[in-house]
Length: 101
Image 1 (cartoon, one colour):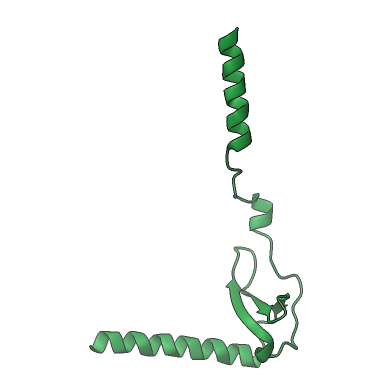
Image 2 (cartoon, helix red, strand yellow):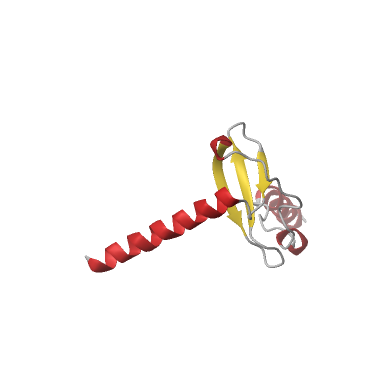
């Protein structure tokens, strides 16, 4: 009888202290982060850009602003397209320089 009580107490203790899984349900994983986008964000107000792609959604651009607010930016904005183009060109240039050394 005492063994059963000890086993039950051990199981309860493990259940309480076990880490909760950080996995998200499939319905949340496949959902688009950005349901609407803005076109009027100034690049000067952006602290950080995140590019997110999920299986059922196009590329989504999430901007963290200097006031810590997050907004979804339309990926078709000209300055954003140029920004991405510049990053790709820098990466290509850097890769070419590494191969020539």
